[in-house]
Length: 372
Image 1 (cartoon, rainbow, N blue to C red):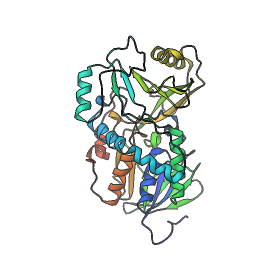
Image 2 (cartoon, one colour; image 1 turned 135 degrees about the vertical axis):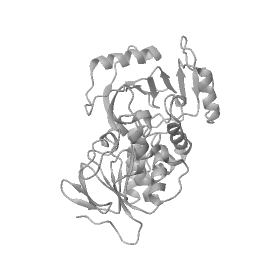
Image 3 (tube, rainbow, N blue to C red; image 1 turned 180 degrees about the vertical axis):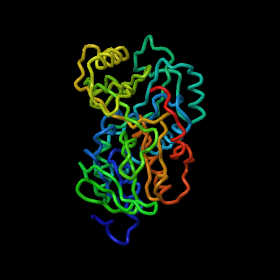
Image 4 (spheres, rainbow, N blue to C red; image 1 turned 135 degrees about the horizontal axis):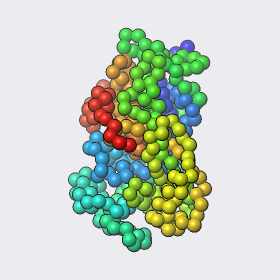
């Protein structure tokens, strides 16, 4: 049995899950002097953290419930400094790019602009002159929206966690926990038991399964998203485009991501040709330069789906030293800094900057899935 680490430091924490949500909590705890061990069932950042597009904003921010907006906006305001600190320690470039986002075909643009004004989000009922979008009505230009290259953020976060003293075990799925008197005393894996003073569940799409002796997080289920990747010359597209559920995300090197579907398909990550053709056609209708190009990659990832996209960030109701950071659905990367801040404040008994009540376990129990 592995004991918590060196005496003299703050409490030790085991984090289950090494996606962006788990790694961001690891980073926040390490910065506060905690000892951290991360157990990952597969590869670090190998699930939704790798598969997503990295837009650092809800796609149409005015369409979401206030708890989503509050968490996303707090993260968006902190993101540049958060990434700068990660890059300074890791010496790796996460490719943060404040490229802006243009949404076209927006219904009720006046209401959208009013929401942006009320939430201090820069917005214009116009499109940049550099984009030829004839036939696309009701554009809303959000110049402050940034993006990040997910796999490179994961690599930088991982390196930072390790350099700050965190320990990461890959291919190490947790099987269950040992509990006594409302406290977890150990996390069991296939080969050994890890002891810790606290445990954080950041298991993404798998959060709804639970572990032996540990109840599952309510109303979390995997939601598949399929995406395509194209390669253009750099500079052909220099901003995120969004229309009727489809987004195009350019990278500085000319790659363009097109996505994404929302499919209630369980843990099935297979792709299909019909979806590939539909995504390609929709992408080409938005950016005609893609019409004669074939995608260079087609993949699917599993998001930790939750009703209304509201995550669960709270203490587990059955154990005083178990905490949850999951259920961010499409916005785990977007919400990472503020989610980690909120959770660590709860762990340390510090009054958080955001009202924690919408993210409580009991609030999640009360939310219902309506459609997909």
